[in-house]
Image (cartoon, rainbow, N blue to C red; front, side):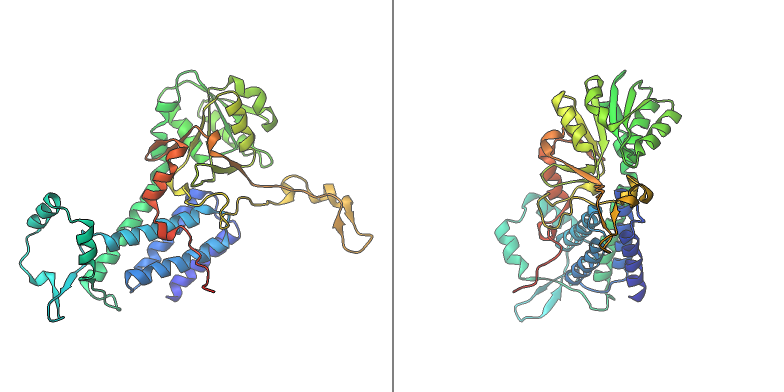
Length: 392
């Protein structure tokens, strides 16, 4: 267990020092860590949930702004709960209590799998029957994880986490496959900053011989739009770099806005790089579709006003001004060195759902009003709040 805790501390340190860039990479590293944590555990499902929660809280505390960490924690918890409740998990040994109180394993009874499937399909159990039978069914776990049932249960969970990692690794390609459905011939696309998802999305349309033009807002203060513009030009895409302040002036020439975001909230709003709200407002004013592309690992089941959500992160002032530019504005006369000039450099904007036209994920395109359904598919209501308040 010491080795596992060392891995947890290592990832937490990377998150705290902001050495992991991008939600996709953060989600992948988090899921891989939980795969290792689960493989080393020898506990029941209830205890496994607590272990995942504890590790998740450590990672979230290391970088509360990176919501992808909490998303993956909740996805793993959903996998555990689904495997625990599923009657078709091959590794669970269902046992029943006889009239004399003795436990009789189902494996000791003559039982045909085909008959069971037929009975389940033709005569599905009612809710009342399921509730009544729940008290008579016991999932048998050994504390040392030496029984075939508990081993198979853990194996099923690890397989589910492997599928989650595969989804994260392939989300860009699956999103890019939908490019032809949105980008048409001779259209003008506008984007802001640098997004790997948007880049691959535009690449896919270009590879399918679609001819279109891209306006790239530079994305101050880091000017990551310059990087994206150079990469698009290398792929022979007609690209134009514009300053962020010119978005409203250029939006009337644009057919569609395609952007990447940091996180998608439960109400359909998005947390995106700073300046994105201005682009969304301009697109709404000129009736230009505002399309968000991103993997389902960015779906956050929290609302923007939730206390757990840290909507913004203040970056280093040196991205705007070097220290030499404002060192003369420091007031050293009183000995405190209090500044006469303050530099505020927020990292993110919040874009409300009414400004978003469409979400494109690896499983398809959805309207913001449908986000609640996706969240209910991926997360359990028991895991929305990860940090349990102590009882008073």
